[in-house]
Every structure is written in structure tokens, then in C-alpha cells.
Length: 184
Image 1: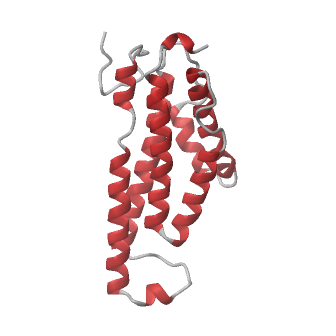
Image 2: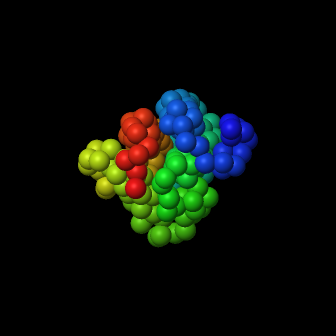
Image 3: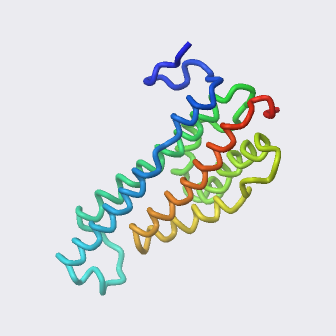
């Protein structure tokens, strides 16, 4: 029985192809990073003092809007990864999709959280592949670097976040293409 698109948690999917189709589209994140870069260039062209100023203030709308939309889409990607993992037959994923997103908004705990949820995904991938295919900590480090970089250069930081998402998607796709019988 097919799961309706509007409710991805209605029934557990057993088809790897269905789950792969539900993975987030990382190319959208790359386009948002490009839009953020264009916003940076327009903002600096309109306000040259932004390039010289070291103070943090409210950025111009042309820079804030694509950067904000990119961050929201990144959170959507995180949610989607956990929806997919929650629907893998034979796998009990320890993190709910809502929890995966909302724990990013808890100050100081979010520093731990950007390592914890990629770790859970890496555990799934490595068990499914029966080999240490995905690093348990490298994804968290790259996400931390991307988030810190967003403070100083929103376009580069956004691109780094979606490069990490690309790494996660690539490994999840490989793991979901393997036999379901290997998951404990």
C-alpha cells in the first residue's frame, strides 16, 4: 500500500526506492547558497560600508532573506532525513524528526546536538553497510564549521552546510540501496 505524500509517517515503508525518493533535494540548498552570495554582492554594492565594518547589526533584506530561507531549508533537510530513517523497516531510529530540528534552538545544547544527530545517521549507515563507511564525527565537525562560517560569510557557510547534507544524502542513499536484511 502506498503511503500518501502528505503524511510520510502514516505507514512504514519497506521499499528502499521510496525512501530514497523522500531524501531532501540538496541542489535546492546550493541554489540558496548562490542566492545568498548574490544577496551579499548586492548588499555590498548598495552599502559599501558593510565590507569595511566589523560590527554586527541587522543585515539588509537582500542579504537576510536568502540566508534565512537557506537556514529554514537546512532545518527541513534535517527533518526529512529523520522522517526517512523513521520509516526504514527493521530499524528503530532513536531521534524523532521534530526533535532533530527543535534541539537546534536550545542554546549551548545545540553545540552538542550538531554532533549527535549526524552520529545517529552514521550508526545506521555503518550498520546497514556492515562497514565503517560514514565517519561518526566528521559530519558534525563540518556542520559546526559551516554554522560558524555563516556568521562571517553567510553564502560560504550555507554552501558548507549543504555540502555536509550532500555527504549525508549520498551515504544514506547507498545504505538504503543495500538489502534490508542487514539491519538489526
